[in-house]
Image: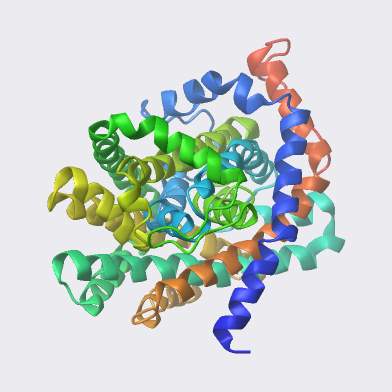
Length: 472
């Protein structure tokens, strides 16, 4: 068995029953236990996240923390909104057919609550480091919530974040940026890789706060540019919208025969591709974004948890949907062409904008990928210092230099290998996190009920202390 065959086999095993069952169980359990809070209080979530992010102080509502909620959600979104939203969605459609989009929506609808839970727990169990920075995430709520006997699982999770970050953010993002710049502008891949490494290195000098300030400026802008451009494609092909939705729903449940440049797919393949790409994109259940959200300034863990719900909504139900619908509305000649990755999205955009279309994909793709490369470094560094707590300036510098290396290793690799590695890595870090989320349901519900009593029902004063258990 070759290395490629082994990776493909491992990918199919992970994203068969194990990860899908675990993520599904977490999302369904919390949806029922909170009486589908993400649906019945969707307006409330938007009002208290998007509606407050742009206020003075970035939506801060507390004194303890490192980043403002605006900076935290921008950094977390920067880590989520990347190549998966453009190249990943297109790749899922090529392999799993149009039905993969439907399963992306399903995983996101339940993932809104999953991410709310993991962010809330990360906030509750976070610690303040000797350097004044707040640290949190699954490794902390596994050890402090489940008990020290579970620390090996916490360490395993932290290891997957360190290795996974190097594989997904530091490896995949420079690869996608460099290939996009080569195809559209003719810039050699090594030039783009060197330039991105240099700029990223400058941003990382500022540490967590520097990353937060950078992402606060670039993330909203890049999202708006891409959404407007995609809406232009959908609007220009508005007559095709009913057929696009009909095709998506049809092939979510029925096999797609080989047609055009597509090899065909089954319902199982559509589900696996949609769930895998959706999870990689919005990171719900992966446990990575909560590491960033744990640094946020807030006066209640659940308040920051709602930013997690908003994040999934924006990443998958808005931005990924824009990509999928743009491709589908462009017509069968486009989505059946067999064109792969970001080139498929460029083909759809070019049908509306002509030669300008490739630039309207390449530039946001570059920004998405670069912001992910920058924003994800918080998770990588936090996980490393959980395993090795001694935070010296030399260690921080070494980590940041290492972060810049994988982009050079990615030069010359093929898209298929790149995305297979991404799926495997994201599958590994989902498993320990899902185990923790299933185990800490009682703790989360106490956090949820406390917020509900104080801020929604207002039966208790907000000054009441949140005392659930003695933190270990």
